[in-house]
Length: 438
Image 1 (cartoon, rainbow, N blue to C red):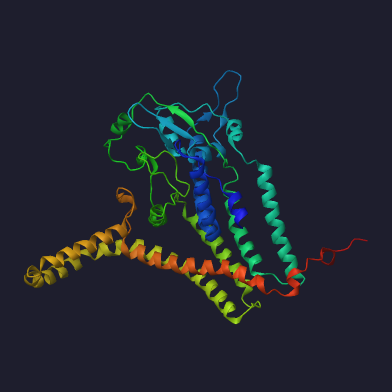
Image 2 (cartoon, rainbow, N blue to C red; image 1 turned 45 degrees about the vertical axis):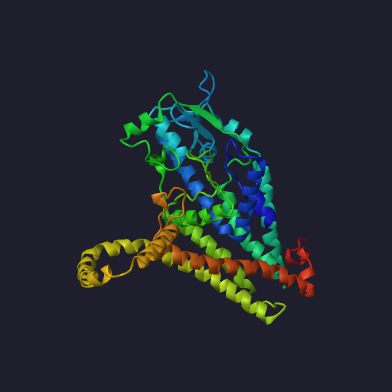
């Protein structure tokens, strides 16, 4: 699982000042995340895949084609490879009045369509040349994982013991296959980006849009396509906690010098349902070992409890997300009613409130500051990362239960190896399964 999680990752282009150690540490961190929560890596991949598809559509609609533009050369369509290359930070914008920063595909389309910059002289072959992992290697990896699943099915057909470690690997392969599909056209191992020079200043671009020069947090082109949805806000809150533990996935400079590897782009609802369905399938595979013989009865009970907990946490996450983000709409409808009632209550308590000591106000202020840090722990208190307490607290409770359950599954896979039945060491007799000819 570790090797599969490592090999399937397609990291974004590192920052210009990053060392090889920092890039390696970030990839190791994402590998650990992939082992513990492979469905999170899949959610990142499907968001990038949807973004790349939208980019291909937008460039095609605008009639924008890429190529060197030399007589005799054929201009090419903007493809998924170029879209992925852009979204992973493949283009760095240089202007006269701003530090260089990366562009994603939608921001590049915005600048090119308004003739602020020229479309880079890039071809499909040039992007492929930057790719360190070719299609053959990815196909071999996919074949190995497919053969593993076929072998597990063969063991089940011949009534051989299928260990919990094998089941966990099968469930892991389900998410990894979805991730591999989404990242099939994404270049891997790219170390350098293409430079785009612009004669127009960032200040002129912002003034044309009626925006102030200081109204951005990540890059001056945030207004083009920055959209934070409920999961990206919650994920950012979690990532900011890891940042304080020196596990940083994103850039810490302003403007950013690279695109975050764990950026959660908002997919359409259909893609969210696909992600949820694959996650349910990932959890469901583990239920196959419900009645297996474990070394002890306690371990079997804990395995069952972990399976139920993981399934319940996903269901609770969906319910929490739906109720938490629709609640403000309901609150708006009854705001006038609550305001009138609260005014009467506050007026009756105003005299007693004035008599409270200043020390009580100081404690309350500290408590409010602590709660504000929970609601928004981003650098610079980015308002788009604000999360109500009614959302973040239940989600962290859900995350604690999920992480404990998932960790026990991995521990149980190792503990079971100390006491395996004899059939666990037997191999599949394929001649007994395949039909004979002649």
